[in-house]
Length: 398
Image (cartoon, rainbow, N blue to C red):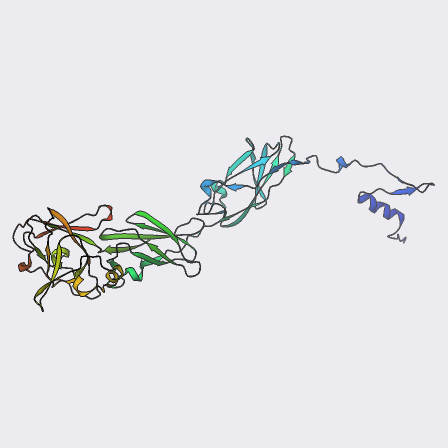
């Protein structure tokens, strides 16, 4: 059997032909010349050539599809997002590729294109790469765009837990009652989540939970006295929201006592006249006009309560001086000033809110405040607090 060497001239010539090079032979002048017909380059390349001046720019998420607080993170919960982009050069259409698969050929109008992923082709959760190839009318291709990386998020965050922060949780801890009219709310959400707070169904503000602990704090706006429904909703970076959690807060804050100075005579009253039988008493925070005194049974004297404002921290901690603290068994007397006319703002109070404190019984008939018996609660507008006014007696009782 004949053996052919791998270095034989015939095999070398065949290898060169297959690789595209042409065998040569030396003439007498030792110059090289092609031994066969020259193949034209056009016969070996595809007819569609690249147009270096035609290119597609990076695609972008449509505004309505770019969910979440950031407009540059390319995170969205929209599984059928709208995509758009622009091209340079003579492109009349683009081929859209998602994760390397051609999904659509789109027309270019005034250098721009747009596409909305159909519902039947909704993108699953995770990362997706979107690239665009421009084509001109003859089918010539331009430069493929860089890939836009879009992350689809479909899992909502865990609901937040929350309640009154310690400084605002006066009285019995955890009962949702406070004398603070601008209470601080404290909660725990997943780390790094936005928390939307609503009060009585109205959006009140947004905070971000701590990146490590998930803790968050929210300072409430001024709240009127009464019951309020506070709702918290956690939100992730893609804009998905958790189930809402709610907490009922009762504000029992500052009130203005309005009294009738028409007669010029003193008015005597007890805490239960102002706050009802559920009262533990109140703290006098400021006297607006006239003179306010507290009866001291042991000394059998009236002692004047300071007219100036009480220290806010002491009021919050319920540690004001004894003369300012009016328990439900105490009697106070207000004497209008000589210049007072009609119904005037007499003094400011904040209810006592002490844990396990005793509450008042029914007002004693002997301590009906002069010509007035009927307390009217109002003044909720613009968070001014509760105003106490007095009407003429109807039965002489208290």
